[in-house]
Image (cartoon, rainbow over all chains, first blue to last red; front, side):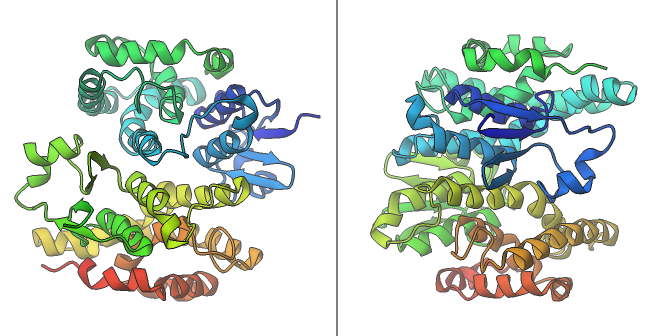
Length: 221
Length: 221
């Protein structure tokens, strides 16, 4: 019996965030499907796991968690020592601040610009058969360009290999799920205009723990 | 000379979040006004502190930070030991997970329901002289009721004094700035329908470090 369970499959970006951490620390996990189209996420069984009815939820023995970023940090804190990795850098306030800062930028600025592109180009057509709303996509691309301008300047000026420094961290990992999905849309070429961002993304995607879950993340109609 | 500087005054909710942590750990701080109406937050001087042009930014010696939640955690990690408090509980993965979970709920679910009520009832009338859009307020109140249903069930069932357990934590502190502001609107009475939430809020507001900055948080036309 695997020690932990993720409720929600890897094609949900926030479940993939959790799985990326589990792969990173090398913890085996069970995946329980929550059927979104059948609205299982709003059913009593899933609401008992996550009262907001969102995917994923996560179980480790007696503990049941929701909110993917909180689950991810729990996994890293609890299981990183044995894996001899430190993606959070909580022992060093300055490094941890850089990790937190770019993690927050992802949540409040990068993700809101990225997500509509992914939903309009991939999710809505695949799940509901609705055509892409090009106006929404264009507005998001405009926002995303301004965000990527800042990322390009940061990576270029700092000469960092990764967002928080010369170490792969939770900040980079948090950018993985939605960037992966936007890279499957016709707008992936946007990154060509940002050479430092593109090189960073290629470094992120070269990591075996992330590569491993990519095939399961692909959205199919 | 105070050891650290907050760029942005306490009437900005996200600056107040940082100041609440500084008061909690008892670190002296200097406050530099960033004139929002004069668009100083989008000027070169502030963009050098925060490339996204948001308030606050924060300086501690050579380190310059932005994103209020990241700054707040930096302050708590760096200065909590001497103050003998532990709002993050990072030494205990289970407790830290509860703190993170309710911190994330605040950021992604509670805040988005609360903020438009505050902006429409307080900020826009005071800053731009525009009347409150009641439709936006009603929609947000509807969202907020559903969120508070979950909070009420959580606090009632767990019998916790605070969101993450029987200890005041970063999760509670993160709810402070926007709840404080919504409590200054005509919709404060909404909390009367949620007795456990209301009792929790009264416990939060009884804390001296939070009380101290409240007078500076009030928005004036």
